[in-house]
Length: 100
Image (tube, rainbow, N blue to C red; front, side, top):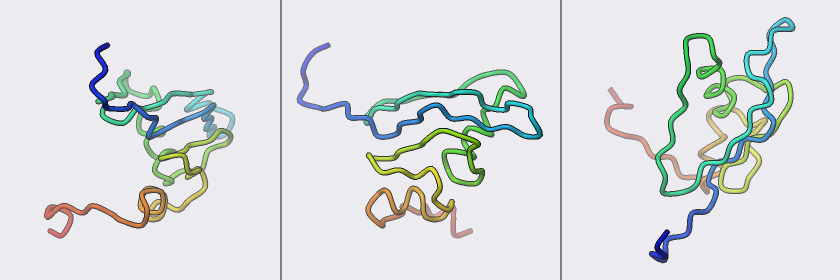
């Protein structure tokens, strides 16, 4: 890869994320890193845990185990309205669509 001077730092880290519902593993030991400046997709069949994963990362669900970090700050147990806003330094980006 050519050195363009752009660092690919890890902006989102998910480590050993687990979520169970009544003994059923919806997400089981999921780990991944997303680097700044990259485009990443989470794909899979219906019922594979994609929505549960997003809800765990954003704080709408609490994990059974594991950790989520955004820009190096642990957001695992933050409320949904605080997690990414707090980790980004207190600034939220709202589009015009969110006001409609």
